[in-house]
Each structure stands twice: as structure tokens, then as C-alpha cells.
Image (tube, rainbow over all chains, first blue to last red; front, side, top):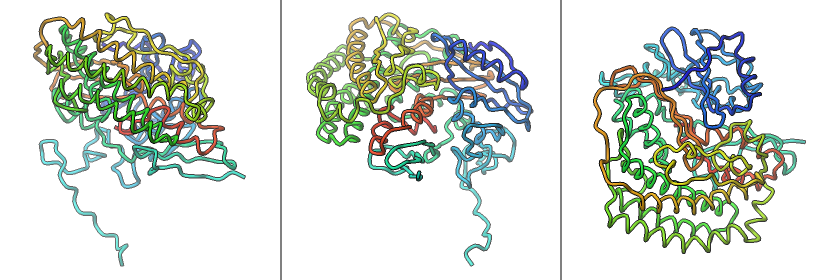
Length: 143
Length: 357
């Protein structure tokens, strides 16, 4: 079972992660879990094959401070989180503005569990299988 | 005066779509920014909508090269959540198929690298040798890439004595055939001209940037998750392959040496293959959280699973090795010449399907 080593707050997040990196931990990745009202943000690090996981509970709508300033390895996954969960990550070293993985016309926040948002906005047949999307309404651009 | 050059997404040496926006000063790369998203499939989300047994097959399709290791890592995660003990025979069989996958993946990567630096004959030869490994996988599972042989609780297929003999014959053929190619890779003047001193990253920097697999071991850091002894690695006398120079040549040499190491591991696993069951039956649904890591050909993969006691997972997260190697790649590219960009990209053996999932 995965062990949570420490719970972070928005105030001490950078300090705690910075201290861990100074101890020689390697950044592995971040994981986001949508819990409905809030997100679980997990920061995974490795030292000598031992996984250390920090947890940060982020209310929906709150901004997540980027750790890419102290750990550039996180910049890719933080951009992915912006795309897939719609979380705004502040002070990113490289900011793709929520279009790192997703195209301009892709559903926003596709990994969120909000009815009518992201992938749940796409029509399904009631068994969880996606059906063909409704035809787009013409905006008159062909005239 | 600098200029921006889009490298990819369609490029003759890139097997999958990836764009790098290169800032160039004359022929020198000043900076590189990756642009991805061409093959994003949302597999993590799809996995939440299938049941956890179906996910074993879905997960294999994350990658067309190291598919077995994806299904193995996922199965290990579910086994951890449900407290399932995998039978000894299955643990050894997992090593056999995982190492065969590593061999075909490394041969594929070395062939593509040879193609990237213009050594067409070497590319053809290495891919011809790869067919020996593909034959071994096809004989034992009926499939060349998507083996479908790993399942939760063990393995779905067995390797008979005749099949084991065939695999060993194929490994002997591989050893004879690859000897000449590895001599060329290790010692040929033109190969060294294109690889030595190109795309250098030192061990400290590679570690800080989260590099994994041959991209980290090629910079002198002996990190290989097989050292933790998962499956049957703990019983097979395994030591990581390390090179210290941190350039494209060092990363290539790690793969060349790992091919011989994988061959030894397969032989040893088949020789020690214990009798017994192939899988442990189980009932119920997974609950709780697990984070499992496995060493794939390109490096460590992490699977995070959260079960809720139903047949569907709350969350499945996959961090693939190429995803971790993108940040180090951006550092390797700075200061290189434009013609070396393709070689440096292929020296990390990128898998974009894995990266985007």
C-alpha cells in the first residue's frame, strides 16, 4: 500500500519539497485525484528505491503554486495537470496555457469528475461507451 | 541572431509525432521546447470506465513496444491492493517475457538510432536480428508484441520444455548475430564520430532532472528498479549496467550491454523455472492506494492505483519513462548542432505513445 509521508499546505509546499530535494531525493512525478469538492495532489520522490509521497489537498478553484522553479523536472507534469484537470498552476517555468496535450477544440478538463464537463460532456450510450458527438452548429464561417 | 525552427512533428527519423521548437543561433541549439499532444488517447480516463480485469488488456496498449511490462506493472499494483501472492513459476515467466521485451525494444531503438545517423546497413541488420526475439515471443505466446500473457495473480500462458528449447536456440542465434553488430556499434569510426561527446548530460544534472533508465545509467548513476527484486529478479543475480560519459555513445552502450544482460537473465530464468501453478485465483475488488514501479526498457515506470471496493478503479495514473526523460532531453540539446538533434532525441529512445497515453 502507498504511504503518505507528509501532508503539505499551500503555505509550506515549496519549503517542504525544497528540503526534500536538498536531501538528494529524485522527483518521480505528481498524481492528481479528483475527489469531487477537492483534489488530492501527490508529489512522488525517490531515494534509494524508496518512494516518498507528499500529499496536498487543493480545493477546487484554488491555484496550485508550481514547483518547477525549484524542480524543473516537474514542469511537464504540471502542464499536463493544467490540461487534464483544469487546475491553474501558477509560476510555471514553461506555461502551455492548458494546451500542452490538448488541442484548441478538445474538451476542457477531460479528467475531471464534474457532470457535463470534459469527457462527460460527450454523449454516451448509457453503458459508458462514447457515441458520435452531435454535429457542430455552423457559425456561419463558410459564407 | 537567433531563429526558431520547428523540428517535427513529422520528421524522417522520428517514429512517432513529436515537435521540438528549437531556438537556433546559426547551427547551434540555444533552447528547445517540446510540443506534444498528437497521440493523446486519454487511456487513464478510459481505465476508470472499464473494470479492473479489462484494464489489464487496455493497459497493454499504452505502448506497442513494452506492452508486457505495462500489464505486469498494472497487475502488480492490483496484486498489492488485493494481497495476492503470485506463484513462483509465474514470477519467473514474467521475467522471461519482460526481458524478451527489453531485448526487442533495445534492438528497435538501436536500429532507429543507426538510421538516424545514416548507417542504413546497420539499421537493417539490427532489425533483422530483432526478428529472432520476435520469434521467441511468438512461439511462447502466439503474439509478437501484445503478448496478453500477464494477468492479475500470475500469467495466462505457460512455456513448455519444447518452447523453452526454441527460445534458447533463438537466443543462441541472437548472440552470434549481434556480436558483429555490437562490435560495429562499439568500435566503428563513423558511429563514434556521431555519438561520442554529443548530447552530454552529467550524472548530477540527469538525476536532478528526473532522468530514468539508460538516460540516467549512461551518466554514471546506477539506478535500475530491478534491483528491488520484484518478480524473480531478486533471485537472478542482477546488477545495473552503467556507463559514465553521459553522451549519446554512453546511452547506446548501456543498451548494447543490457541486451547481453537480458539474454543471460532469460537463460537463467528458464534454467531455474520452478514447477507449479501459473496464477493465484482471487475474489473481490481492489480498494486502497498503491504505487508500483517497474524497470521498462526506457526506464522506471510508475503506476498509481486507487481502488474503491468496486470493480472500477477511482484513479489510474501512469508515469512512463519517456515522460521523465523529456526534461533531461531539453538539457542535452542545448549547445548541440542542428544535425545532432535527431541523434540526441533517439539516444533517449523516446516513446511518444507512452508519454501521452
